[in-house]
Each structure stands twice: as C-alpha cells, then as structure tokens.
Amino acid sequence: MGRSKKPEPVKPIAPEPAREPIRLTNLYDAGILKGTLDEFAREVILDYGHQEDVMINNVKIGLGIAAMAIAAFSHFGPGKFPANWWMVFGCVVSYILLTFVMNIYSWKMEGDAFLVTKPFRNGKGLRLSSRMGRFSNEYTLVLTGREDPDIEVMSTVRISSFFHEDGYLAESAWRAEVEKLWQAFEQKRGEKVAKKKD
Image 1 (cartoon, rainbow, N blue to C red):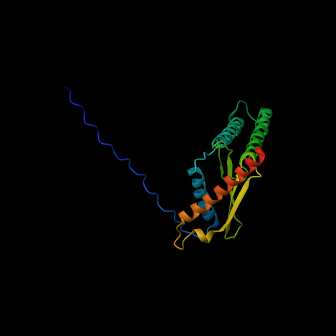
Image 2: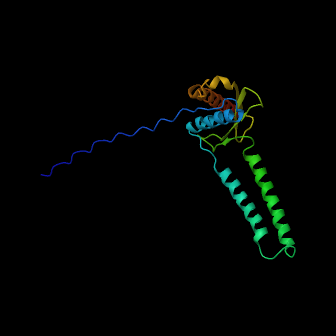
Image 3: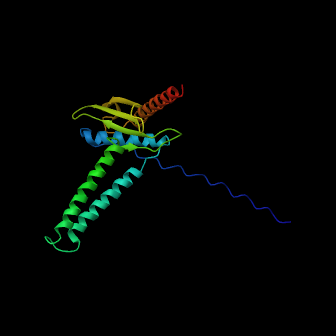
C-alpha cells in the first residue's frame, strides 16, 4: 500500500507593507496641500471599486504624439525651405488642428476633473474634481455624474481640519469625509434612477 502524501502546510499570506504616513514639510504651500488631498481622495474612490478611464489619457497621448510627429516632419521632411513651404505650411496647420482637437477632447471628457471613472455596478461613471481659492483655507471636493452632470454633490472643508501641526495628514478623518461624500453621491444617483422608473 502506498503511503498518502502529507498535505503541505498552508503558507500564510504576507500582509501588504504598511504605507508611510503622508507628511508635508511646508503647510503654507496651497498647491501641495490641495494636491495631497486630491490624491488621497482619488485613492478612496478607487478603493470603492471604481476604475479610472485610462482611454482618455491614451487618446490624448496619441494626439500629442501625432502632433509631435508632424512638427518633426516639418523640420526633417524632404526638400529645403522655401522650396517646400507648402509642406511646412500644411504641417503647421495640421499641428494647430491636432493640438486644438486634443484640448477640446480633454475639456469635453475631463473638464476640471482629476479623476474620471468607467461605468461601475450597472451605474454610470463619475468625475472627481476639487476647488480651492487662492490664499484660502477652504477646499471643496466635488463628485459629479459623468453622463449626467445634474447628479452632483460637494463638500467644503477647512484644510486645517485635516493636517496636524507637524505636517501629517489626518488620513482616517479625510477618508471618512470622502466616503461620506461618495455615499451622498450614490444616494442622489439612486433617487434619480428611482424617479425615472416611476
């Protein structure tokens, strides 16, 4: 009789390494404060299962590469200026048109949002943006429906409420604020869907 093999011991899954707490060295730089809150809010929304729509960036990169290729062709293409001025003129016009199309596309798809997501859980995508006045201590985080801009919720907070004096971000407090805003957004979207069904 053959001996049955001993089952291999289950290897414990190594926990993810703890992330370093976010600390800023200059609490008077409004751009860094806003950028830090933006990036952490982005992480919270993605933690809920939303996925960033990277196709928008891919299209912008493609248009940018095409514009740069045309600009390079105008310099290194066949012939010498002024004999090839028609070709150079065509390249300049094409470059301007591609740049214009890229800016219009970015404005239409992203607006002032720093995160645009794909549709999620049989719902639509969303846009996450923020506003902060110059020399202001108030920061406004805005969640807007990607396809329906009427679905919008916002939260205005004082930045000083989310940073300790030593520069550390109060991550749990800021996460709770973003989660509260996301739940308000989902509730508003649910109410609108229910109204359409009635």
